[in-house]
Image (cartoon, rainbow, N blue to C red; front, side, top):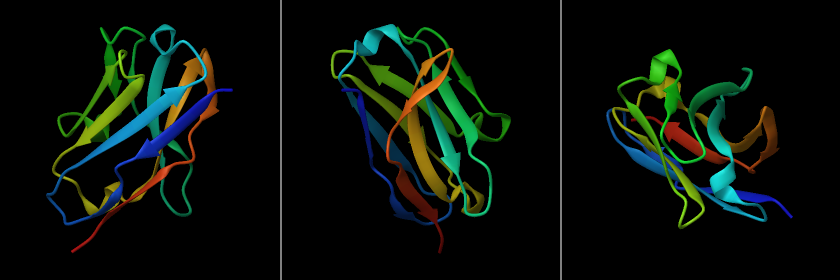
Amino acid sequence: QVQLVESGGGLVQPGGSLRLSCAASGFTFSSYTMRWYRQAPGQERELVAGISSLGGRTMYADSMKGRFTISRDNTKNTVYLQMNNLKPEDTAVYYCARVSGNPDYWGQGTQVTVSS
């Protein structure tokens, strides 16, 4: 069965960095676009970044451009989100998703808290 398992979240000070990972299994990883989303308390889930199946194309939400980098390693069935210069407003649960037109499978999420 399809499984997506996020890791790498935690508590970080403003201006710090984190690298999230999403390990995929149960499907042909290299055939799918992958995305990162996040959801802050009391807010709707929002798109953070996406990467095409072979990694040739990426996209970012405007507020993440220049600070976040999405990448993937199809030999390890893993997608990454490098987050730099983190701000308190980046505090959220971060989810990875497999995309087939729309997201069809989600991970359980990993908490990122940016606070001094």
